[in-house]
Image (cartoon, rainbow, N blue to C red; front, side):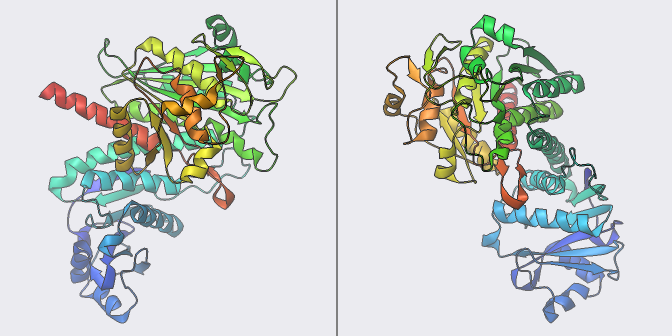
Length: 502
């Protein structure tokens, strides 16, 4: 689907459908009022009759409205001004996209006068409309014998004034890139574990390099990781017939000598828990345990499509956690790439084992910042539910930048403490560190474990266990935290550009 910015009087736009807004208590937004004038009071008559009230989320599809060229008019209730937070705006956009999809139109123009969101930011509103409409129209059918019916909507236009057009077009480009990254992350995460293996993730990374000249890829196999001494990562995949992989992607958008920013993703393509076997109920959802890897792939795609003037390294630690005869056992001790030894008390705490070696490995790039993304702990779901990612960091400036990026991108995170006092829970009688710290503060002690491998650089950890997928009837991957990470890198690119100009 294509997105575009259009200008001009609403009554003159030739399209299958125009979308206009009515505020609470039947107050037409400016474009709706202009349309009503061209239609000789057609909408006002509906308002006075009570057919249109302006209640938030209300929709009324009108056909053959006199005086305008559009074939249909979708009147959307915007609600009260204090209702129009991001959650409200997302629902409105989702509702518009769903209705247009169901109506089978091929083109539509959205003209809401910037009133659908409390944030009076044309760039942000426009970009989010692109991202959220794309999210609503996403369809998964790769592993279905009967494919989904093609979506007829080919062009979604946004009506802006001429002086806002340039800003809007920039928002379209960024929004489409991020939306594509989110869709790719959802697609790979939705695939079953018998298709999406560590080797398959490597193939996806290679595919990115074939699509974008700015991306190069190196794949480390088990022999190479063994030679390097990545005992923690390799321990996770010992029980599986699927070989583990370390996937390294480099995006070169900045100067050759410019140090990169690094993204490190947990890529457990299926997590049985290993010898510490998980309960069988809902274990199918453990195909989503590579949500961090999916977000890295999606963000690298978005960054390359936006052509950001940065250098970015994306590392994915990929393994399958199975209870085979060669599987790691509780009580086993492994030596990490850093040289630290780990007593594995629970093989279901495997994400931190693959990440710790990847976090040590990424240090060779001398990164300006490192962010790891992982579906790491069920404790994070208990703490934050399914709304916010957990954020922990050894650098307050980096943490603040990520929190701000998440707020702007409507992909929010919430910071938890990373105090030294929690480290004591990871003490081991037989190794330098244990891989679990007990039930209390499970999300924090998992991050404390990773913190022991990230002392050389600015690092943040995003626990996306509660946001990476949805369960129930709407089961499926969400593509988070691609918007947050993309916004963080967009902010860095803007700061760099400002510094160079100033």
